[in-house]
Length: 285
Image 1 (cartoon, helix red, strand yellow):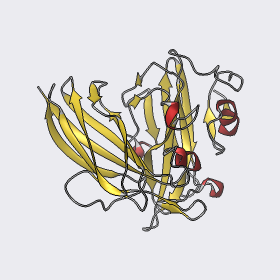
Image 2 (tube, helix red, strand yellow):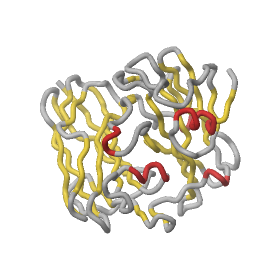
Image 3 (tube, helix red, strand yellow):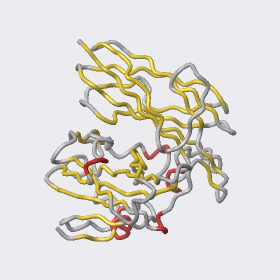
Image 4 (cartoon, helix red, strand yellow):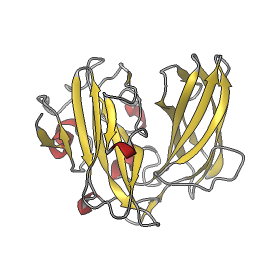
């Protein structure tokens, strides 16, 4: 299996300008919409970069691009979806949504930093590798603490943007950033809508929020998968209805790009700044 630069991969997909590495035995299609098809395509794992934490540790961020416009892909954690070293395995998604609606931003939009891995202060230049096989194609992407990959986190002076504060309960929003707010488990019954609230706070109105499945069976429907908050601070609610029992992890992402109010998710392409959250739900019959 040959290793090629994701710089080349990003050029063909017109995803972003970040440079990293991936492994693939396939031949890439020319620039344009040719790589995108309704079904039969693969999920491409992506390393978005890293940032230092206040305690001396480092966070590596990973995202993905599902090359299908209609086929949602689910890959349970295991031999076809795993992270090495093994101590970091288990945080990656098992559910991969189709190419997002370009109406909110632009063509070739993908999913940025859907999960992160925190490595110790003395981790050095070792890799954290995400391996995934979809539709017969096995790919892997290494995350490394290379200086040129460093990201702004929580806020950036370059574009004067900042991550929204978020709460998933009745408490005031006090968490922000991509390391992730973790809550749960909440309890729900099959077929019974579970009310989910997100309390948001930002210096400007227009925060965009998205709910989706991160891990678990592809058996959940959201009343409102994404929405915008017209005020600088407030509450957005939705419901999640589960069709099968099991353990689910829901992923929430919130972003506010004050420079491009018409395109609230535009800031993803600059790799700053947004907030991730993960809500575990136990569903019974």
